[in-house]
Length: 165
Image (cartoon, rainbow, N blue to C red):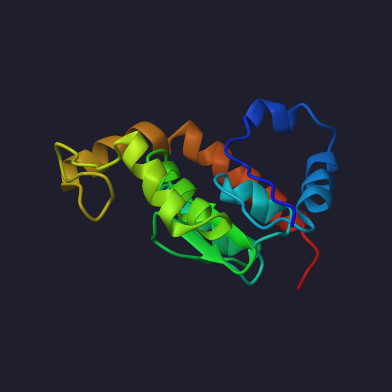
């Protein structure tokens, strides 16, 4: 079995490629991919999440539907041969879940212990559902302007390039 793990792809790196080259590279690389994380929009833009349950950071999660994915509010999702992870800290959960699938649950437990991974955040503010309204408003205002507009325009453009199902 072949596995390809996409942890993070910088927006500037994608923009440096000629139009359509990134999409075709992604489709070729992931034709037989079994484990994928992060940047769900990039996987969606390559047509790799159509018909799959997927997740990504909550700020962008709903955009996955534009690519034919079923967005879910989970820290990580493994659906058949696609695995996606949520925000930054969900990467550890994602990694342990994938390791459990690829190797064994016992090895994943050993790695979790080696990392001393036993999260106890000082605040219950890690999701929009947990955050108080003021915290959520502050972050949305900070991220929603140019970042949100740029992301939405990129997602829309990418979704329009996909072949229709």
